[in-house]
Image (cartoon, rainbow, N blue to C red; front, side, top):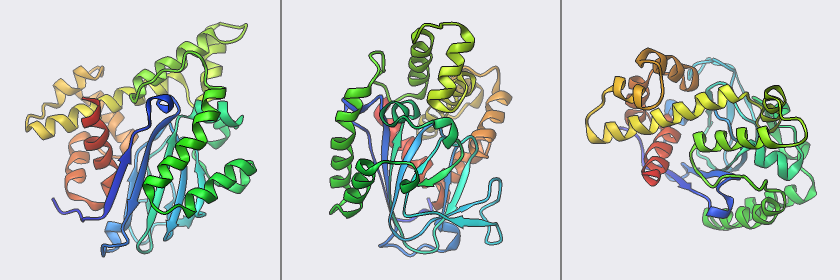
Length: 295
């Protein structure tokens, strides 16, 4: 293992917010000295939206498809932003030490609470002043001024809970798994409103999540393979063919193609990077945080 002692922390939501909040992540490198390659951040394709605070330091997002190299084009983002669902892996870079705080929201929950069109947010990072009303902007300011990340989590939960209770669909599912969530969204789409045709249901899914049901199903399958792979690596018995079969893929080649699309890497290479590369901290956090908690 060659990654640093920088703080990466994950909180899962209370049960009343499980169908609204995917999780809360914090990353703090203020107390460690990271070199230039270690200050990249690799993120996979994500069906979630994110409330993102850069409490200290800056973030530059690389152009789509650009490698984690000094010559790659990049652009700075605001200190408080809304990130939409991303259909491609994303790489960002920090010019120096940083402290970031991120709340991952299910896109349908964000749409129900705010009326925002998540389709219009696809593959975008937008300053909060451009998308949220005064109440949401005030919450962003309170979170930024909080004493620590534990207090930030409490502030976010106390803000979201009454709004989600007011707008939450009756059939929203309490689960941390993408597969369960996507099935719940599909069920609601099929039974909502007067029109219940397949085409109308697909249209509702796209409106609520920004993605097709097929894409959501693929992300759920990929997540299962990710957790299965993490557990297999911990057990020291990795058989990719068995993992592909257990996760619902046609074969190992199918799983590898989808892994490259979602993460930019084949499964074996991804786990090697997770174990050796500082910049893959988010994958480690999710695999050995959420994955262990879901067992």
